Length: 354
Image 1: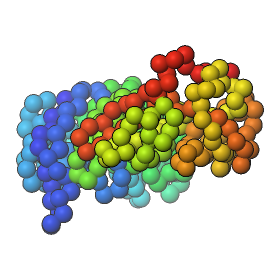
Image 2: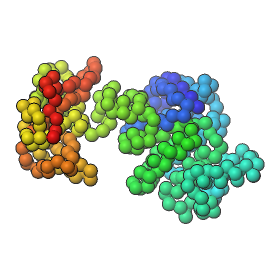
Image 3: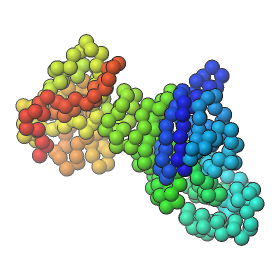
Image 4: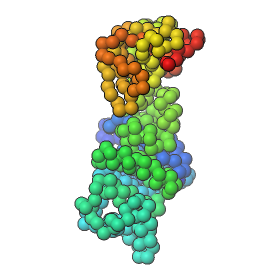
């Protein structure tokens, strides 16, 4: 289903929850609505589903205006955060519910339910009740029930929020594979960056009722279009006077320009680890955090605390130790624009860690 949303607005009393939102979604794509709590993500999802009215704007599915259509006529499957399963019904009957409401012949209902039981890995659980299932299994039932009527669009509101971390990780991969096999256009709401980056084809960053940016996870991370997106996605350090760092002296402090420096923009180590040590500057290790596959290093440089990573294969650093630091690039922004700036010392041969 191709989706077009134009100038969508929604108020709750005096609160303007969704502000002139416009976007398009191609058929078969999996889109993540990502942003802080209260930003308008769920309101957008519920308006697409017809569960919430809109104040102004247009929603079109395959070019057809659906503003006035009730939920049951929009061809949508909805997966709720709390599963919303019927406690008195078995797995089979929960999945079959929507088909029975449509008065689908019994033989077709059974065939479709068993197809979904197989697809979602629930074979052998058909006669169990929700209280006899794990959180991950209940969520699979919710997915199967939403898919049973063969909707053109699948909407998921924080689908993994009620599941523990280990199962949540497994379900992300499972959901991605499932949607690829089914080939259904899907939109899911989340405030978890890792979840959105891992699962979605594209991400829409929603903040204070507006779409800040839409694009692939890589494009959004690599080229954030607004200061909010730059600070919201990934780990980073925000500083006011980047001209105090070596290689960025030309940035004027009186221009209102601020800098965001991501961990992968920074190298830290002993002087002998750099081919061109003259391009580095002195830093002091303030904290070391073991991340399993690497160290997260907090280093102070010219009065600024920066965060970077260091491989476990390299010589171990220690808190309080003096090291050499190279900032390769920074994301700069002010009230007028934003841009990536390379360290001017990269005009000479680039220092490479050895």
